[in-house]
Length: 449
Image (tube, rainbow, N blue to C red):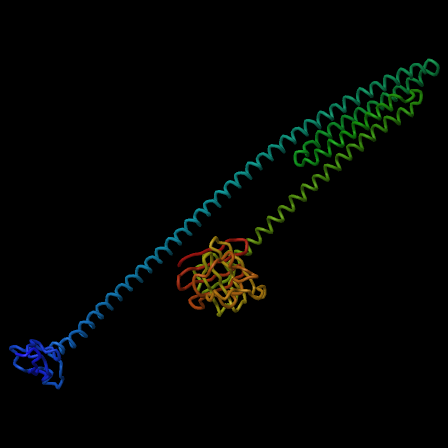
């Protein structure tokens, strides 16, 4: 057979080599072929049965693979979401547990500090009382010693003056009438006796007044000053008596009267000082009693007010627990409301009150009126911030310096608000948390319900 001999394919009719086993046109084997072809049945030339079957099975296989891959991806995404939800719940529980532990620790520290302060105050009060008792005892003993020394010194000076007067009276009597000298001497003796009696009365009075020194340290100071004055004046009077000419008995009598007057004035001064100190102590006690009565009345009025009003709104349960501190509810506040969580706290906004509340995670908080917030200078790369909260967060007010970045966009639903005489309550209905605010000097309270 020639090398280039040709023949026609029994299947497709195309010309092929005479020695070919398989047609290059239709792809069918030539030897032993019966000559039937599925392509002939449907009018599809050049296509074998295997070609048609591959066209059917390949899409089916691809569809099946796509279905199972979609199912697998759906299950995988569901598992991821479940794991994320479980992680978020665990983190939230851990954060709540941490906050509860911190609150417990802070409460314990506060209670311990209060107990220490009370113990310190009691110790100081005891020490002060003991010091007052010691001071009063010392003042009393000093007053008694001073009075005794005064009496003794004045008596000695008086005796010396009497002796001098008698001696000089005797010398004069030798030159004059003896009877007149004896009369003068007797008169001087009587005056000296009167002076000694006055001194004894002063001593008794000083001892009596020393008891009043126990009630006021100022009175003790006044007494000591008065006694020092009396001592100086009595000494001066005694020296004056000793140097008076014994011949002039009237001068001796005048000196004795001057000493008696000085003693009386000193006693009057001491008594006046005691009266003034007593009045001051009484006034201080009266002021303290008035302040205590006012405080008691205020507490009673607050309790009566809390008991007199009633409230049946959304936050009734927390109000029942804190009504003595919160007082009566004000007019019901209606929306719009908004709130937004941040890394270090929350921000609440009330459109009815035109106010914002910054609640930090450490329990501190502050209330800001919208009119107090200047126009913001905020970067555009924070799309989660808007409205009044954006103005508060951005410079120049710059609350974001402490709050840090927002965790999500602000929300206007799932929240309730009620204002009271002495505070207000925000309720996060989505997370079932109440935020109770009392005053600017107290940290807010966070409670789950």
